[in-house]
Amino acid sequence: MRIGVPREIKVQEYRVGLVPAGVRELIAAGHEVLIESGAGNGIGVDDAQFRESGATIAPRAAEVFERADMIVKVKEPQPVECQMLRPGQVLFTYLHLAADPVQAQGLIKSGATAIAYETVTAPNGSLPLLTPMSEVAGRMSIQVGAASLQKANGGLGVLLGGVPGVPPAKVVILGGGVSGTHAAEMAVGLRADVTVVDRSVDRLRELSAIFGASLRTEYSTIETIERLVRDADLVVGAVLVAGAAAPKLVTRAMVKSMKSGTVLVDISIDQGGCFETSHPTTHAEPTFLVDGVVHYCVANMPGAVPRTSTFALTNATLPYVRALADLGWQAAFRRDPGLAGGLNVHAGEITHAVVARALGLKARPPS
Image (tube, rainbow, N blue to C red):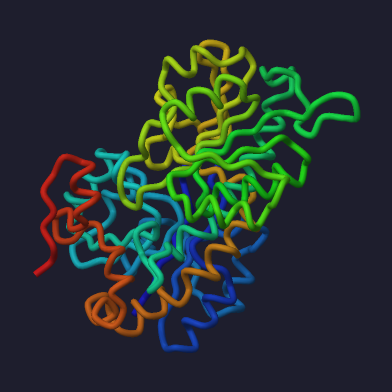
């Protein structure tokens, strides 16, 4: 199979779908790999390093899309990329279609087979291709939240960990999954006053066992969230319903009740965001104000640390890329039902039931 890796063209996105070590593995398995020139520059990997690993370098994205049987990317295809996809071609990348009907229509029109990293499941029910970027985003949320709290950046002017004689910032993390746990780890490490909110009592018990007295946990209700965000300095939204739009846990009225200069970091923005006042931003202009509250809603947070993110992601994706290339997608799906859960679009139809429901469409599984 010929695998194509184009350069990412989303605003300030520097990650790449494969690294040289992955290329070498695929070449050794008898496949061809076509890399767009400059695709790895953002992570410090030049064309020469890809050539040394056995890849062929293509001067333009159009050539990659034209020649490849499977396209491996990081972020969702932009409109110009959707136009280059074709029937029978496999696309393997993050899609997040529930919050992006324009992209969904572009993929439907292309006729391509689109497999989403974020809905591939492991035997234990986890999301193995979302996990590494959730880890990065969770850790980053505290970094960017702490920076946004600085007065020069529109924040309240609060040091996250405080100092002797001055209390630390109050951090509220909505969601105790992968992102929320990594956010909590960072916030606790910086000596903030941290509370995690979740609807799973079992998960709250696990977090209490992990962090002990350094972390508070609360069961998620409207009243709980309303009370906690009113007094918070930093709120991190880290909720996920696989394939579906994120629930709006913080309403516009709640935002209005918050202190001016409070910071909201919406990790869930790829799936539409969990704050009612959120809308996607970019690394070029990451924040905006609503009722004096700073909103950080960058839709590709891990793109700010592309080298770390790329190596973390490709460590997870490579076995799946290899399976799709070795077996073809249908045989790979039969062998691994969890990989089959990644199928979102095929032959002009949305195939994933949860994604289709979020888009107001009817799912049509492939025949």
